[in-house]
Length: 121
Image 1: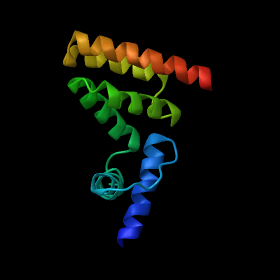
Image 2 (image 1 turned 60 degrees about the vertical axis):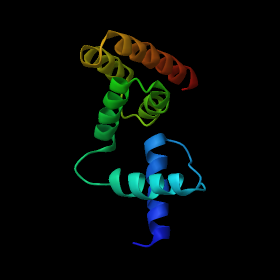
Image 3 (image 1 turned 180 degrees about the horizontal axis):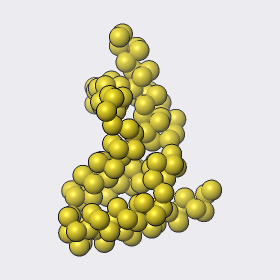
């Protein structure tokens, strides 16, 4: 696979994952993210995008990385990977593993994104 092919594959997977058009960007960090994470890791067989999203949401919630959850939750809703009820259940489940403060924040964050999604659809 050529570097150009890898970049196209990575950008296409980013579009699938995030649900919006992602333009090519400058710099090594962006390039490594697209060429490795999205072209090689997100495209591997064995887990669906939904599976990867569930794992990612759990990890992000456990680390309190709410800014990245603000990207992942709307993408899961917009791509139809997770329903509002499933997202709410994720919050209930994860609260018992990540702790009440992080779980409470996740629950509010999920409800906020569900409301925004419902308003825009």
